[in-house]
Length: 265
Image (cartoon, rainbow, N blue to C red; front, side, top):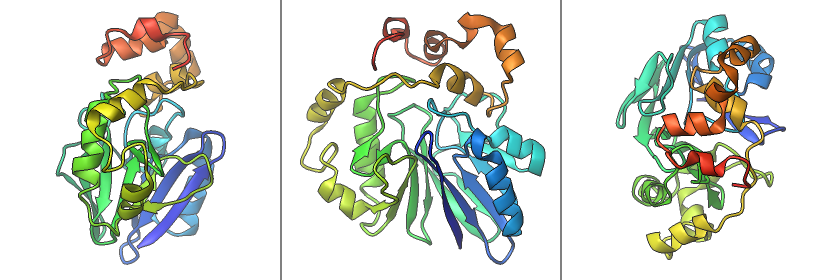
C-alpha cells in the first residue's frame, strides 16, 4: 500500500493519501482546502488516480478540498450518511466498504464528536483512520455539532477499542507532533477515555473542558456541508443569519446552540 500522512500546519490537521500499487487508484482522507495544490501535485508525482475524496466528518476547523478535487480530478466525494452533506456522491453507511483498486476500507460509524462521524478501517493493513473521534491520548470535543459525550464514549469503547490491539490509530489532528498510536497504547495511556473510566466520569470530564471557540467554524461548517464549495460570493449572498454558528447547529440537531455563540466552548 502507498501511504502518505500529510499535515496542515495552521490547523494541525492530518490528511491521509492511500494508494493501491498495482492499479494506481487512491483515496484521500480529510483534505484541506489550502493544501489543494500540494495534494494534486503529489498525486501526479506518484502517478495515482484519485478514486475518492473521503471525509471522517463535517469539520469545524478547516474547509475541505473534496469538492474541488472532484471538479479537478473526477473523483467521488464520500461522507458518512448522517453527515448532512448535500452534494456528496456516496453516503457511507456503517459496515459499508470503500474499494479502490484491490484495496478496501471498512466504514465504521463512530458518532459523538458529530453524529455523522465515521472511522475508516483497513483490516488488511491493521490501520484505522479515526478523524476527531479518537485522538492520541485524547478525543474530540463534544460541545457543538450534535456532540454527545456518552455517544462518543460508546463509539470509542465498543467500536474502536474492540479492534485488534496492534491496530494503528491515525487521527485527524495532533497538536504535540505525534503522528500515530495503536489501540493498545490508547487503552493504556489515554486517561480521558481509558478502560478504567466509566461513562458518567467521562461525561463529567467533557463538560468541564474549557475549550476555545473554533475560529473558522462560521465559515467551515456551512462550506463543508457542501463539500467545501461555498464561494465567498455565495456566502455573502446568503447573509449572516444563514451562515451563523447558531443557524447551522440548530439545523443539525442542537436546539440550544444560540446560547453558546460568543462563548469559549
